[in-house]
Length: 92
Image (cartoon, rainbow, N blue to C red):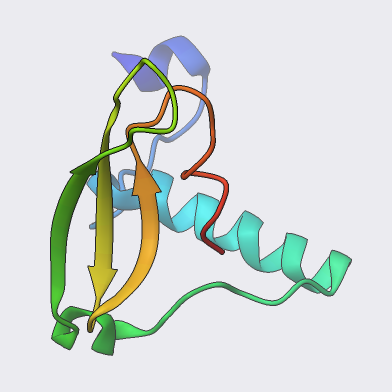
């Protein structure tokens, strides 16, 4: 029925359910070639890293936000939970 509506053969690829992911990967590849930017992909071995979270209450202002620290192999890689940006903007 759909072929009749569009007027030509419709091909459904074997991996139709991931075509969007394949398409965006192709676009990202082209964009990286065009701009010369490098990837931030950390590699599949990232699954071997030890991740943990800790938290503390910030006393820098009356908000007393609970700050969540995300650590990879003991190194703080991200902080979140602040309302003012004091902590979330401090980690590279």
